[in-house]
Length: 157
Image 1 (cartoon, one colour):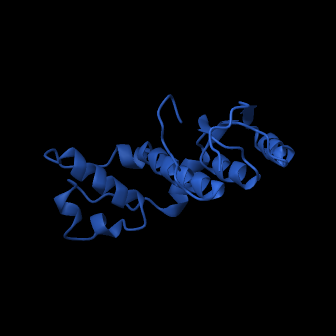
Image 2: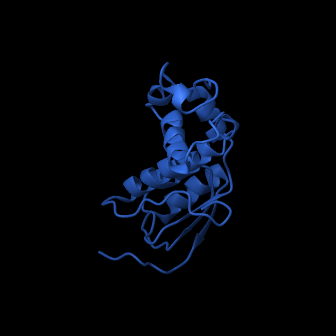
């Protein structure tokens, strides 16, 4: 969550790290959409919102040539934008902070914290109660993440 908006949800996975990765990828996608490279894309004025959103998804993803190739970019943009490089994306995402992560079940391993941190997480709320809580606390402390134990577990096997 960022500024009251859910920016990445990783529900429905069989593994907590998969949930964290999925939520992190969605959050990264949202964060990349806030970058100057995306906000300043020279879209044609008559672009429909859905077409613009799809073009942005292609532009920030691995398949950027599907919107930037000669003969294709002219359908979407008034001028050909430069490629948004992996290095530029990494640099933009490295500045992310202030994201909140909430979990309906405890974080049993510190890998969840490590992955969440890469997506700008500064705050974590989770039930606590894992035998490895100290490992998770230590990971939060390493990254300056504030973590609150809610004491309320909403997910049960």
